[in-house]
Image (cartoon, rainbow over all chains, first blue to last red; front, side, top):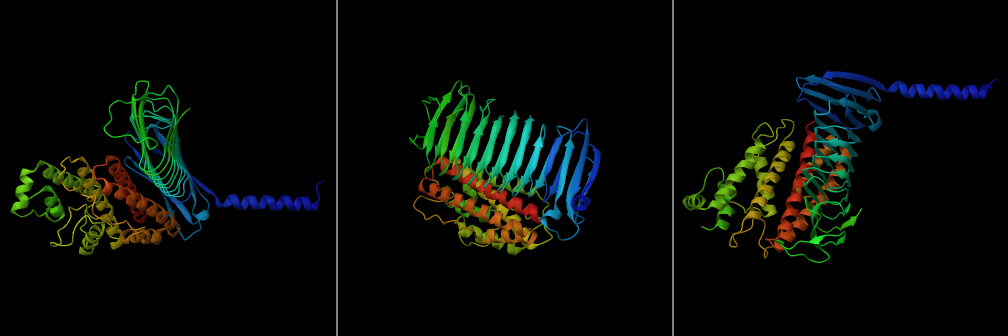
Length: 282
Length: 214
């Protein structure tokens, strides 16, 4: 038989857990998404996760953690909007709303979640993901248009193929792994850019920053026409390249290099003002 | 009239037209007429981003003084207006209108830089600076930036520090790139960095505006 003390402890734990969950309020919204639909989510605090749904239904599950915040979700024609609305002044934790969203794979997506994190996977959408400090993760997407804007939030893209990718983040580190497409552009200021992959698809790749580092790891099978230039920083190359014969500018050893690998199908420009650029064999 | 002389007065005449010499140059110079077309196109596209509400004269004065500080225009010959990437809406506050106009101003500045980078005439004057001119240093945070930060702080005090840090970071990028362009106006790499820096600053302004319009 359990002692009185043990029973008292168990009762306290159970009550505390019940109180915590009582504050959570989950609501589910379901809409039919016609072709060309746009899903917009505006949420200051809390994660936003987007995954593909079955069929053409959009399912938005919003979980609030206090009675000071509510999720306003509605549909007007082809526009579905989920917006967190504050009912009273609240702390960050009380303001938090968690969104779990399932969408047809090709709807247009606009996520504005300042605190984040934002996670998107397995879509073929035109998506704009924005958040001041949001950690943004996009994975396993193809035939997509991916636009990511953060101030300080780190950005991680992986397994993105045949897509247009555009990432801008003055202070958030950007990591791309197996990201390829007709155009991939990353623009940062102070933060670092790391690319691992083969720059496939005969596309145009531009990795640009001011003072952060740019690190590229690519396999010797990569077919690239690669140019790396730093105005005042250092450029290191540890990758076999055939020198280009005709260049429109002068190369400065230690600050720039240019060359091709295999057939040079993809154009890769690595550009830093004062940061370090390193290109290595994977 | 040379292209350099024409482009100095361009901000004042782009809407209302210029004098006989200026009109003659515009008709005869393909480069300058192309520049005017590009700027008008940028202004048209910017208009389509937002409903058009004409900002108060104070806004234009603010833009004028910002451009003078940047060295992109010289004081006076009357207060010609810019091709309005016009104000952003907010009936909510004049400050937000001002910030929106500043964001549109950045678009025009990028347009000017992109055009001047493709010109080949050695005699023409780069829009940014001659190598012998002193490049005005982009302050860590100028008046427009301070207004933007105040707007952010009014709506989301906790976000102010992140915006301030990002603005200072991007302004440092702009300063470095402008110095590199001033040192060698024909350096395409330096111009490309300057465009990238302005793109990032434009993004910061747009994100801040989006916050304040929620």
